[in-house]
Amino acid sequence: MSWYLLFVAGLFEICWAIGLQYSDGLSKPVPTVATVVALGISMVLLARAIEDLPVGTAYAVWTGIGAVGTASLGIVLFDEPATLARVAFIGVIVVGIVGLHLVSGGH
Image 1 (tube, one colour):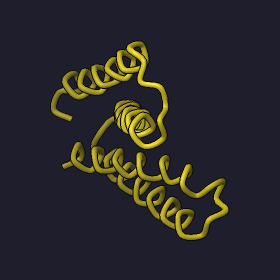
Image 2: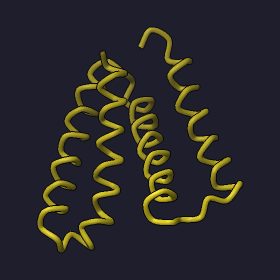
Image 3: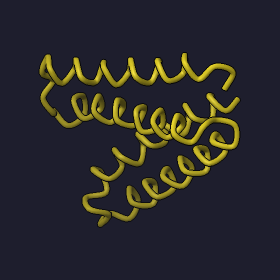
Image 4: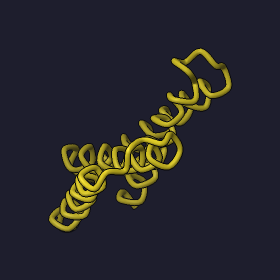
C-alpha cells in the first residue's frame, strides 16, 4: 500500500509542478489554487508512505516520479526540446526509480 501511496504522491507532484507553469507565477487564481491543492495532497501522501518506507528511498522515488513526469510533460505541453540526450537521461531516472523499488526488499 505504501508504494501505491508513493506513486500517487508522485503523480500529484507532477500536477503541482506543471500547475506552476499554468499559474503564471502564482498570479492566476484558479491554477494557483489547483497547484496548492495538488502540492498538499502530494505531501500528505508522501508523509503516509514514509510511515512504512525508508525516507531516503521514498523521497528519491517521489522526486524521480515528479522529475520524469514533469520533464516528459514539458516536452509534450510546452514544446521543450526532446533531444536524444534528454530522453536518455529521463530514462536513467526511471531506471533509478525501478532500481530503488527492487532493492528495497520487503518495503
